[in-house]
Image 1 (cartoon, rainbow, N blue to C red):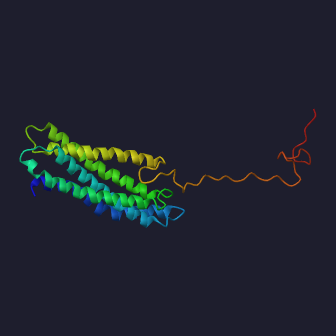
Image 2: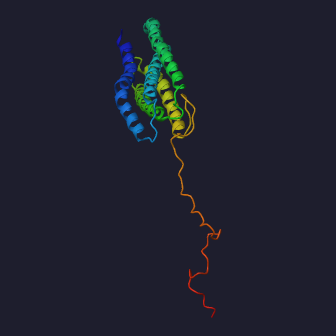
Image 3: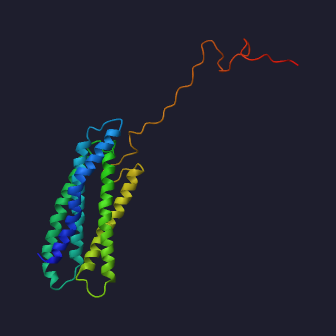
Length: 232
């Protein structure tokens, strides 16, 4: 495997390693901490966490495979074009399992209470936006650097263009989805309204009128309740 392919594999592996190492520990602690503060405990929190986690891994694996596929399509020909077949196989080797895992876990999420209790969905939506934004921003910087570089960059411009197309598009899409979820929309994995654990404020009932008293609620004018009115 040449250095170019190794660099591409590193680009795919970097976000996947962050998802695999960072998410299970920190995100689960945050999810449990938020669930502990809710007045009603979610019995499916652990199940939804696992489903969202594997859907996230499949999503980022698909982004990496899409970057490899587009880069293989637009990379220069010549001697490098002789290895395009291997690069296509590598790209589809990422895309096919990523699509299977992502579709299966999103389908399983529709059978849970993810619409009614969207706390885990919101947590992973923010995490996906963060990871995709970091990689997309790095791709944008690398692409612009390759564009403004003097002389040939050895295919880095094509790689940066492919990464910008995939990750920056996903960055914008996830930002739109996160905005929908925060404002009460459903996003892609489910369609739901505002969170169901919001309880409308309650007000004390008005004091009941005394039995046999004035229905208007005003105290009687007689009986010494008020000082006498001086007719002068």
